[in-house]
Image 1 (cartoon, rainbow, N blue to C red):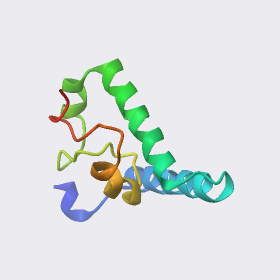
Image 2 (cartoon, helix red, strand yellow):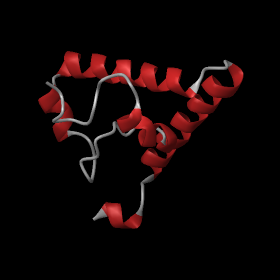
Image 3 (spheres, rainbow, N blue to C red):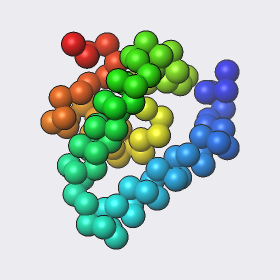
Image 4 (cartoon, rainbow, N blue to C red):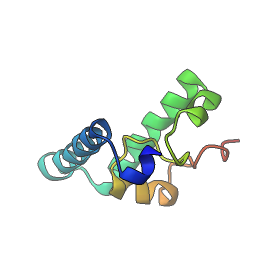
Length: 93
């Protein structure tokens, strides 16, 4: 099981890229944390409507995490507390 050994190089690269993007938006462009949560929530909603929820459920990683893997950890923690009305897969109406 690759999950026991930790994330692979590609996953680490994606994680670093997501963290750098978040840092840039927060510091350079002065976005607020709530704005970022809403942007990623909207992007997730658009993705779900384009490819279908069933497709996303099958492809979300080792632990079938409710967050898309591209979210950095700080945004992932906020995922369930934000006000965009979206929740983990299975909670959509």
